[in-house]
Length: 390
Image 1: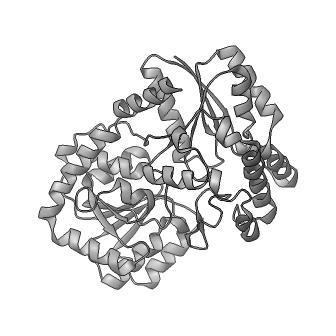
Image 2: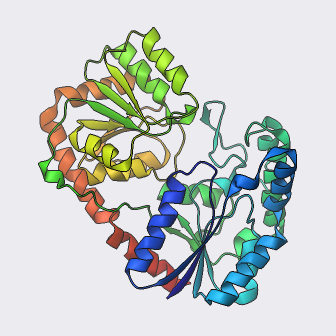
């Protein structure tokens, strides 16, 4: 099978870009011909760059031509779009329609029903724009990058293609990463019959997870930004007087704020910031941790960090919210706590540290969950089923 993968890369590479590359590698390893057509946002510089990107987000004739040329040259059986925003635009679907090639769209976030793509505003979950043909609340709050004009451009894109029937008629199949996300996108107006649930996957770590030991530290891995809930985790340590060491891996816009929070609370001896680490180091840390804490306060899409933890046989303490509540089974592969509730999080961390005999079976269940759902082979079978249906 010939597959054309289309993706608008991000200025700061993240999990979504990694998923695109991993999926292309997976398809190639099974003998498929794969062409990855990527554009990046490096051209979005200054007022003119932002203005051009705003127009492109609504409809980009040049991107339609770019994809049309790639289809003519590569003759794909399937076009798989991961991210069209902002430079490629929904015009890529027209290129596929004109060439009579079916198109699959993976939804890595909530962009088609939320200008910010996160269903998150002012430190909490927000669904004000879900299901609205004109996402006016997002514009009024300047949700996208804190800009009223840029949010208006995103809202215009969503509205134009709602009225045009793009989302309903020009995409043959959507892929959501969890059932929770599927339900939200159906609420947002996407046709349920076209949505397939397929999680992300990771390639197995090199080490044998059975050789890992129950560690003596808790671990956080992720971007240090508001929606990741690290402030709640630090507050849990302060309120709960927790003694198990915490290692925080990652970097981000509120890194210094979080470090100051730790110092103010007098937690410098308990909490260590390790900064950004390479994948091998992260997996080694997971192999030797007691559990992963994932305190995010937004719905999430599908956090690769949780799949990595499961591959290492590492239980996860996560909020009973959104996709996380679906991925982590309370008492089986980890523990749930009330989102944003530092006291409840502290109680769950304390329970985990004082009940090691209960955490050992969770390690086995976490790894079994990885083997059943998040391996490359399991993912390949799911992806092929979707491709064959379209």
